[in-house]
Length: 214
Image (cartoon, rainbow, N blue to C red; front, side):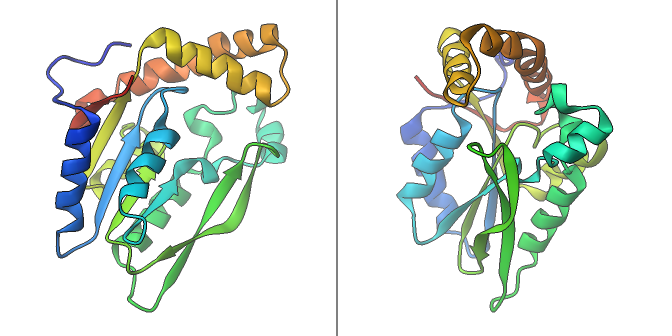
């Protein structure tokens, strides 16, 4: 899962400078943040958004998780987090709305609540004055099904790179925090998270920069 060496890298300070250039544009910028499970996508997105809190917002992909009842109906509950356990076309529709958002329009996005393991509709208001929108999620560069329509709607996509041992440690800890035993957490990481991580790493050809996080 090592990213291709031909992908340019940004340190955090360089990423901040690039963000400043986005804010200075006359038009809205949509920046995608991707990375394997446990890489710290959400943490990085929050750090970046906090630099320009009045002019930027986060638009997470995770709000488009299918509900647990629907995953059970489809027989995909054991693979929750895989590409086909999200409403990819719904996320595309949201990004299209945000590309053409009127000055007097508030667009509402769903939010995934980890304590419930369910998405909540209409939980995130996206305001028209936001110059920078940070689209954060696993599959923004994936070239299959509805996901293939996401990358063309984004101005840039950044891949979060983190030491592998730290990433796996975070993943196990996250699963344990939300109720799994250590063994169950480790099993889920190997059976579900890691196949997804390999798939995400395979999308680096559609990424403009890696962001190095330690």
